[in-house]
Length: 348
Ligand SMILES: O=C(O)CCC(=O)C(=O)O
Ligand SMILES: [Fe+2]
Image 1 (cartoon, rainbow, N blue to C red):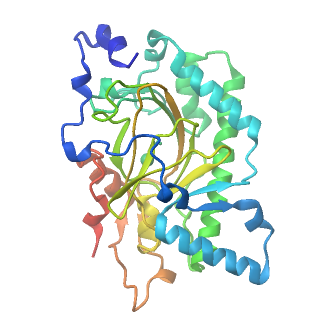
Image 2: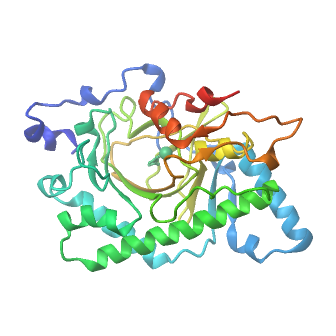
Image 3: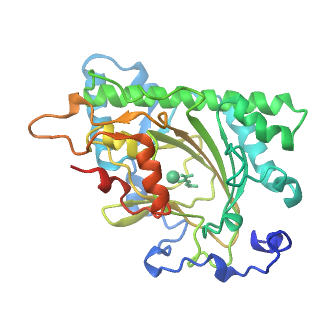
């Protein structure tokens, strides 16, 4: 069963599948959730343990490969990352449990514009954003998570502890990857994380996509770029993430034990266009619900974002003007997160 039937009572009106249709035919999914092809296999995959252990010429060569792959793709997977497997499994099992709860319970933590904090349950139907999706959000900051947790698991310290540990693990991984990208690009003049306040500016979002009878007409998450610095995505084995590269949608095949990493809009600006923030979307299928967990690393809202001087020279003049991070999020909101090139507004 989809989301709509459950919500009729709350919204006081009957929703049909047509309410979710992506009206613009050019936005509709053309590639099924599991249509993997050669391009799917070429999405780069970094073996972090090998990179960590490398030195000298070997490391130099590996970093050149990292640079070329990430500059071309902006999306890649990491394996042998060392994130505690049990922590990941427990977090995934707990997240599945959130969406399994009955609707009345989930709605206790429904977030609306007046909630003040994003912590809690969100639903595409309630937001009327044409996303066949339920989600649960929180800043990594335990004081934010507590806001949602107290409504759904008032006495469970264990859940709060797990969310905190998972967020910390994602932060460690994000930091390592950003430092690796700095090294690969030869950045010494500044850093990609200067404006990131750990825990307070890391945002964890659990996405749940119920099966849908019209996966060719409805989307789980519409095409968008992530406005942040970098995103770490954990997807289950069902498949549905698609990436727009060179005007072609490529299905990102789930790879057990991996994380998908993508460059966000801020990193594209900081890297002076060397690292691309690609559009992506989540498509649906008729049979299986799908879970993904996205961890976003955001700068502070008033952080100044501009191309780092190491990456600007005569051949590569600054591609973007200096901007304040909230300009990106405001522009994305205005474009209704439709994935139209937000960054084009800031090009010089
Ligand atoms: O669920 C997915 O595969 C993608 C989710 C996503 O892009 C997001 O939450 O920003
Ligand atoms: Fe995204």
